[in-house]
Each structure stands twice: as C-alpha cells, then as structure tokens.
Image (tube, rainbow, N blue to C red):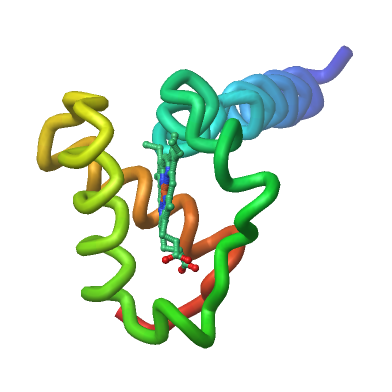
Length: 94
Ligand code: HEC
C-alpha cells in the first residue's frame, strides 16, 4: 500500500471511531430523565409546549418537580434535563 493511501485509511478509521463514540454518548439530560422516574408521571401527563411556552418556564417546571418531589437534582442537572426536554419535546428558543 502506498504511504498516502495508508494515511488516508488511518484518517478515515479514526474519524469513524471518534464520531461513533460521540454518537453513542446519550444526552446527559436523557439519562437524568430516565434515572429519576420522570416518565412515571409524565407518560400520562405529556409535556405540553403550549403550557410551558418559554425556555425559562421549562427550567422552572423542572425545578418545581424536583423540589416538590424531593428528587434532589443539582442546578446543572436541572439545566441538562431542561435542555434535553427542550430538544425532545418543546423546541423553544433559548
Ligand atoms: C409524582 C409525579 C411526577 C413526577 C415523578 C415528575 N413530575 Fe413533572 N409534573 C408533575 C405534575 C403534577 C405537573 C404539573 C402538570 C400540570 O400542571 O398539568 C408536572 C409538570 C412538569 C413540567 C411542565 C409540564 C408541561 O406541560 O409543560 C415539566 C417540564 C416537568 N414536570 C418535568 C419533570 C421532570 C424533569 C421530572 C423528573 C425529574 C418530573 N417532572 C417528575 C408530576 C410529576
């Protein structure tokens, strides 16, 4: 194999490896969402973008559930969760 071809192969392989690990990494907020049983209630109570109609309200709602249910998330986790819910359900501008 020519040296340049080998170089290309290595570049292609490492790109593939890097992008596939990036792809396999779930959103941290998705993990929090699953680990904290949010869906236990929110399957029956779907997230409603008309009701929670801005991103700051979404942060408040996540904090509301966290505080009232004693879930015990940290502030940065609340933001990650809100970001995940926003990507998945709300699609509000930030
Ligand atoms: C014990 C049941 C319960 C659990 C568990 C729960 N919630 Fe809630 N959540 C509620 C209720 C009740 C409301 C108020 C809904 C309403 O007023 O219609 C609400 C409202 C919300 C809203 C606003 C809903 C909307 O329509 O826009 C968000 C966002 C939310 N919760 C996120 C979460 C997250 C994130 C978790 C997990 C950390 C969580 N909730 C866990 C019961 C729950």
